[in-house]
Length: 453
View 1 (cartoon, rainbow, N blue to C red):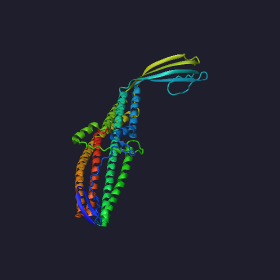
View 2 (view 1 turned 90 degrees about the horizontal axis):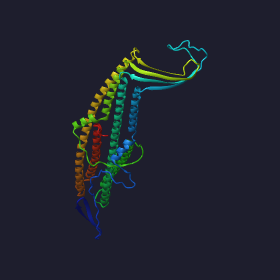
View 3 (view 1 turned 90 degrees about the vertical axis):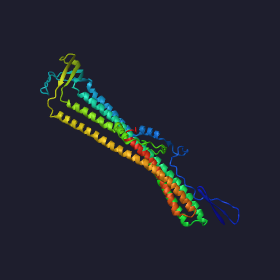
View 4 (view 1 turned 60 degrees about the horizontal axis):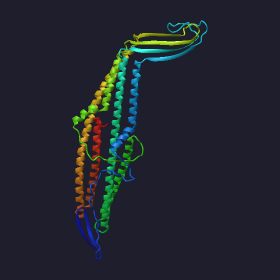
């Protein structure tokens, strides 16, 4: 038996003849392991999960997530409170029906206040009307406060939407990352199985030792362990995506990984945008304005209240002591004189709540500026890591090619080849992770600047 080694680009093979016959065969040994593609499949097969675009996921989450529904309901309740407070401007009309049975010449010997002590058998109906004329602006300030509170609740809806989209982007890119790692793991398993089969063939023909076969088999086992872990990560990421969509079901999706890496805005622009756009900062500012209006209304508690009253009644049956019908109208002025310092205490309470609301604005601004700076730095770091990871992958592919050729020429060992394979796989994983980390960090920066709505 004669062997003749030959080399071509990316392929190593040999001819062999047996007993002088002209049988020829080519066995490809250690084909070039190309860089694993980390992009998910866009057009699924019929038995694969449907493809979910980021825009579709966004629409589903905004429509279905309970956090947004809760915030919307709270905003609706705050809007209803405006009408409740504004009702003080309108008259109050009360209808009454009464019937009384009394003994002849009945009297009340004692009672509360100065009242007519006569009690007569009668049946009567009537309408009583009260109308606020002026409380010197207190009701107006209360209406203004409730309107500002309702506006703050609306900003809470925007905050809930931004928070939901923040979680959605993290979950969506988490699925993309897990699928990319699974693809790397699957291609690594295939590539190492090919190497194992070829090394095993060479060992059976006496060209390699059994130690080489053992190392190749160990590499295959490591790749399969990576594959099992990657599959678990995909399943867990799908669960998180379902929760972020507000569905909470077991529906599986394929996601599309964006190919374009967004640009990073200047830090100063990001800070200004955050101060202008963050809905939670708008909410605390509106809360402070509402607290200031409520304080003004509490300051006017000790002012008089002027109102009008009217009463129209009909007595279709009585014991001949009343006319069949009568009407009365008047104006009243209520002047608070003393109530145990209640109004002073309520005013002081409102002052302290307004002061606390002002401090919440300062605290929110400081926290937002801090979070924007951190998010910007993490985004910049992620972009640098992606560039370096891509360089490492390019170098790892070249190193693997060299290690393969050295092994083919018996200048290198199986340990050297295995190490090169491990480095190439690790570099491919770093690229997949870094690419998705960039997307997550940029989405986080958009959230911190109030642009994720």
